[in-house]
Image (cartoon, rainbow, N blue to C red; front, side):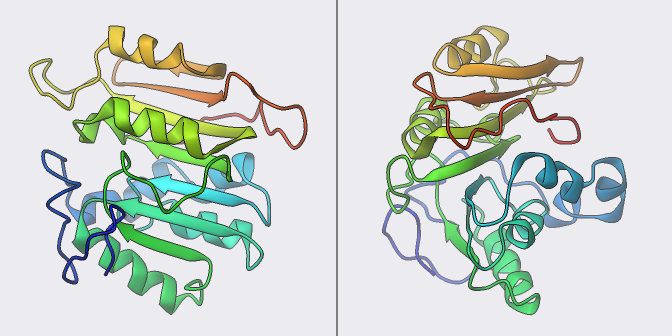
Length: 219
């Protein structure tokens, strides 16, 4: 299995170069019936993604969103599914193959801060649901999201507010607003437990935009 940094890992192993300090959530918590009933990934995907598009699911886990994304974009589209947890990526790869989505999903073990395998300005939609608050290199991940996003593309970012401020992975209110200064905010919400936004690049183009879609149901 290839790591996103270009290194190689064993099956089910995390890339030690990319994932130091990342938080890995148990697989059964990332994809289960209760979560699906509370937040339908298919409904979320339909609001933000169109057939034939190129998508990056950063912090994809075992495929809660990546597989519905793959169904939505279809054979003419592509889903880059990136996670630093090798076990999660291994499970996602197996699910994709079993659903005949192996040609659509490109699973990668690595960091969202190192996406060199995704070309500049090539992605229609970037999903980073709960990503930043599970990794240390926030700046690196945000820079990569900006780099890979098309001028006409959108990105969904969400973070939890439940972690200790002393946690290096936590995203403070001040840091969150600093991050948003680098994007055009299309919509968002701040609750007691989480924050989310739908954003585009500051140099956003006018063609093919999907801005204005409701972001409820994720994060």
